[in-house]
Structure formats: structure tokens, C-alpha cells
Length: 309
Image (cartoon, rainbow, N blue to C red):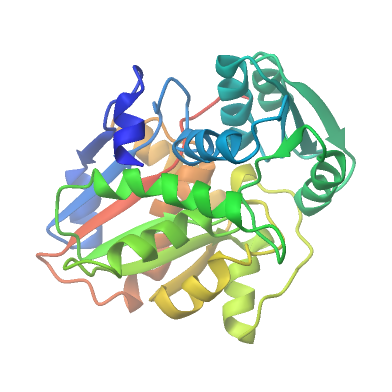
């Protein structure tokens, strides 16, 4: 995956930015923010997974003429951008809570967009129903019978973690369906560096945390949140067993906490939307149970840029 990403003209490792003020606030040695606000020409990390999956999938299905996906925003735009680069059509399904700005950004890539008057899970179901024949589904959530392409996406995310050239004591990852957190667990549980891992979700869309507490994969109702990219009601079937065994901590955060984190990261010179800033909100919410020391290194994965709505 890394060699594929490195072959792309727009590839650059994203910044790992120290924020001394946050280190002082948390009482640790350093806080480093993995800043995914500029990744492969797009304002989020999602292209790492989507573009690798598309690279693999069009080899597996050479007759495909259209790429199909559902999205809360960034994944769909990444799929649409790569489709245009490859001369393929794209169609993206979005739940009706997605902002007009995000829909316009997807359309700006040349994709068709269908707004589904329901949840993210419903948009995924619509995309899966539309796909078939020469329409290839590139979805970042897995379910029984649809797991190969989602695994390609998770594999693509590994580049993000391979770029981190420090030995953290804690890595904090926002969670929607859990694929990015799955990539973090896979990376850090297979090598010599084994930090604690904290997953963060919106309180109004806490499908992973709810499933962890119940001990089984659950689908939950969700409601609108400023953390739109994390507004998912069902964990990925691939992510679930990995997160159940590999996450050390999980926490939920409210919208106000995410928006405060956006402001605090902006003050440090980092552009982060609420879904990315959730990492900071989460470490604040969970601070008292994280066993952090005064010399600890904390890495926050800020998954997206701030995009005005």
C-alpha cells in the first residue's frame, strides 16, 4: 500500500504537529496531532483507503464502468475524485443530514449524488442495491458477504500509521463504523510499538461503544451531530472483532466538546473539522482513566480539515 501511495504524484506524508499547550493541559510530555487536512489533494484521510481499494477492485472487476458508494462526506468525495481520474463514472448516496457544502463538494468531482431521506445505514443499503453488473460498490463498511473491498480500504489506511515516526504511549482515533480504528489496532498490535488505543465516537452515534458494552455487534439509532463523518449506526463487521479485542478504551463525546476542540486546534494552527477534532475531545473526556504520565507521548489522529458549511 505504501509503495502505491508513494507512486501518486500528490502523495506527501502528512504533518505530525506538536502542540505544547495541549501537552501542558493534559500533563504529558508531548501531544502530536497527525494532521490529515491535506491528503492527496483532498481535505481528509479517506483517499488513502478509497484509492487503494479502487486500485485493487478495478483489477478484480475489470468490466466496471461506474463506482458506487455511500458516505457522510469525505469517503464519497475521495471515491468520486479517483473515479474521475480513471475515466469512470461515480454515483454517491448520502443521508439527508449531510451538509449542502459536502454534497456540492462531491458533485464538484463529477459524481451523481442521491440524497437518501434517512440515516447513513439507509444510504449504504441504497448504494448496495444500486450496485451490480458494471456498477462497483466501494464501501468503507463491511457486512457478511461484503468484506473484500472494505478490507482493501482498511489496508490503505495503514499508510497513515506507518508515517508516524515516534513511539507513542497513546493513540486516539475517531470512530464511525470503526475502519480507521481497525487499521490502528492492526498496525500497533503487529509490531514492537504497542501504545494504548482510544476510540472516540459522538454520543449520538455510539455504535462501537454500545456494542463493546453489550459484548456483541449492534445497530443503534442515531441522530444529527456536528461530527457528521462519524454519524454511523452499525460497526463494520470486519472492524468489530478487531476493536473488541484490540481497543484499550472507548469514549463518547458531545457536540459542544468537539466544537471546542476545533477551536483549540485552530488556535494551534491546525485545521480540523469536528470529526477530526473528536480525538482531542475524547482524550479530554477520558483523561482520568488513561494512565498517562508526565513523560507520555500522545498522538491524536485529526482525520479531516475544517470545511465551512
